[in-house]
Image 1 (cartoon, helix red, strand yellow):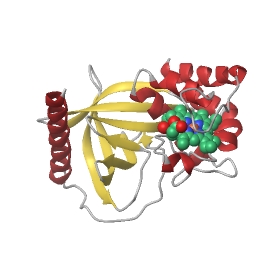
Image 2 (cartoon, helix red, strand yellow):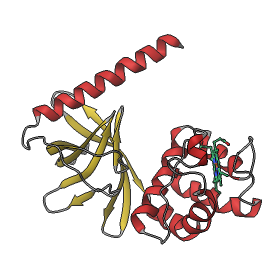
Image 3 (tube, rainbow, N blue to C red):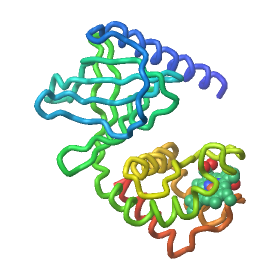
Length: 237
Ligand code: HEC
């Protein structure tokens, strides 16, 4: 077990250094510090075939990243078209550990989550997963965001809130109105949590209904749990 952890740690460090190297090598844009607002959506320009990712979390660093589609068949590969270092404290648009995960890319009326594998020599990002999250996001917005997350969970699950103090993993962004960026960010928080391990979806349902000594107690009835179950089914379909 220890050996495995050491190995994983090494691989991650290697991936991170490769990624930084690649960014340095792609000197089409000069790196500089800047401050941006946290946004959740990336955009795909169908004319230039550039995928613009407003921020990518790489370890403790943040970058904006533009990827250009270069091949379509039989694989979908992107090269780095530009990047910038960012001086921000958090990012929900994308993260890079062993894969690059881009949370939300609207294309026409649909929204996709994308996963990329990093290839060496030449350095390319290859699309490995394309997930249509349109209906899951809509369902979340209509049935879960206001009623449950803002109404019942946010009381503790926010930065420095009671749940944060007791090391809860899921922290939501408070949202008095229904500002759509925050709704989308909180959706991604839940999605990332339930996808992190195969058991996290049932853990979520159990905690929400007061099981496993949930500090928040029983906040979701058996009937209401079906809404969360439906959300998870839509995310995982
Ligand atoms: C009174 C404060 C409080 C409220 C309100 C609350 N929680 Fe929690 N929750 C906690 C704390 C503290 C933890 C971490 C320790 C634990 O498991 O009890 C936690 C942990 C969890 C976890 C385990 C994952 C994690 O974040 O660590 C889930 C899932 C969860 N809560 C779901 C919910 C849901 C869903 C709601 C709203 C319907 C909610 N909670 C409302 C306090 C709260």
